[in-house]
Amino acid sequence: MTQITASQSHEHETGAVTAEFAIVLPAVLLVLVMVISSIQLTSVQLMLTSAAAEVARLEARGDIGAAQQVLARTLGSETSPTAGSGARRVQRATIGEMLCVTLTAAPLPGPLAGLQATGRGCAAISKASS
Image (cartoon, rainbow, N blue to C red; front, side, top):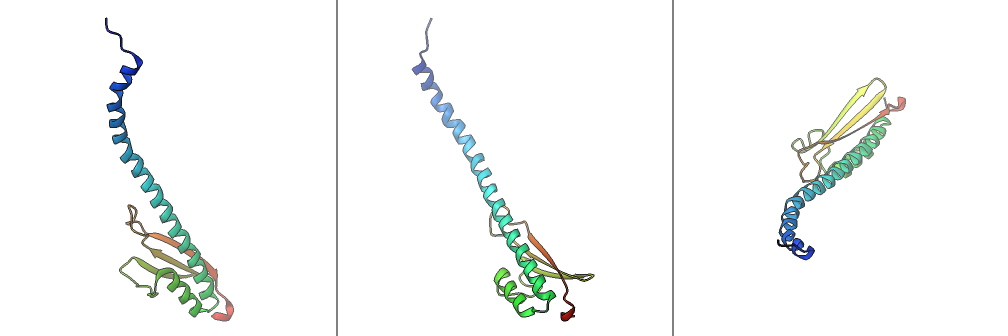
């Protein structure tokens, strides 16, 4: 009867550990890339929400020039509602006494690049700016 010692059994397992590592590594990297991309998408959405609220406040009180500066800083130099090819969009809606601004932009390139990030902000319309 042949006895296998502990050192002999570990020698036979080294190939199995390498194969397991080769299978698990791509899955771990994929999860890491998706987590980083999700954080990036969330960051873009927070930036758009903050900018939309600021633009809504400025436009509601009649300060269109400052609102255009915020839009230029946030979305780039083109600030018209049809800027870009659908990648950047500014929508305005008046709901009762509220002015709502919605900003939409494609996030930075990556696995989630096909998703649109959107931020919306509303402000009460100032009676003086009407």
